[in-house]
Image (cartoon, rainbow, N blue to C red; front, side, top):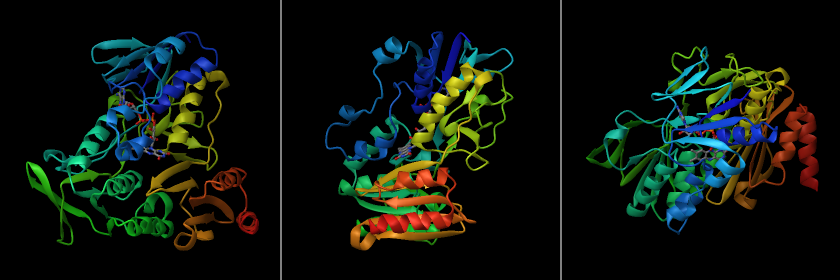
Length: 404
Ligand code: FAD
């Protein structure tokens, strides 16, 4: 291959460029990105960026400067305009009316924040996915006193944590019985909920939002039970959908993401996918998964580029999913999958020592682990899951750690 084109200039896209150069590829690399920014890091946007005392512009979390990207990595940048179509027969990606030919391609267009019907019509209602979003949310936090966060997932809960740190009066509304129910299950979701309670954030679970109301500017959120929450600003954190609209008509299989085999191959000659947009066959759990986690997006970017440049030697990407989330100074970490027959807290107690270790069992196997402030052990459990450890072995390991 002479020309690698990477679509999506964020974490997975950057790692694709770096991964390609690491293999010794010295052909042309074009990096196409819809945002006008150089690739930057998203996790700080809902954490440090919102909390920082300094001017936000000073905190802009860019990964690499332009010299590094264009000089050392030798990437041609096409930033500020989205790719609009992909022709897999002609091997051309279109950016508006500009065609870009490729031999190898990595699709890394990530995901877009979902919103609620009508939410876009009022000032003071935000989603949080991009740096531009974060600038707007941060300004709103500086200017308001009552924040309502719709959705108690990672991003919603992190925004709540940051807003409360800035002294705002915060309410989180979550339609499910606990925050993070889908990601970590209800038992540990309830444990995470207590982080909100003990830090003074009001949490309203099991109730939906009927309307976001105001006159030009948001004034209140009306819940399905008839109650009303006054609001100076509303952040909608109800998840993200894979950015695949531009692939309509490409013939690629799209089903909650770009469907890939275990090597991240899409089925179209030379075309691989990586990161939040990719739904690939994860050999570790023998199922299709689409993760929205930093670590896998970074890993997949590198693997997809290597495989795209040497398809005959393509290697599978197999992983135990991992993510972290920071709430009120506590670090939540999760490895594996939350779909379990049983969840057991094996160590720690949030009330007495501010620490928890919980294990997830499916059949006779350990499939997941969650820690709050358990940085020292979480990767050990990731290793056990990767080794397909039995439940009994996992419990024995937990006992040993406790004794130590
Ligand atoms: P993205 O980062 O979504 O980037 C995709 C890029 O492609 C975007 O820049 C987009 O503009 C561009 N694009 C889209 N369509 C097109 C097109 N047609 N043409 C060209 N470009 C296009 N994960 C964790 O594990 N821990 C955390 O604590 C954590 N915190 C987070 C906090 C926030 C606020 C957010 C938003 C995410 C967080 N994540 C976290 C998730 C993590 O950031 C993502 O998994 C990661 O950014 C995915 O990288 P990506 O490159 O696949 O996609």
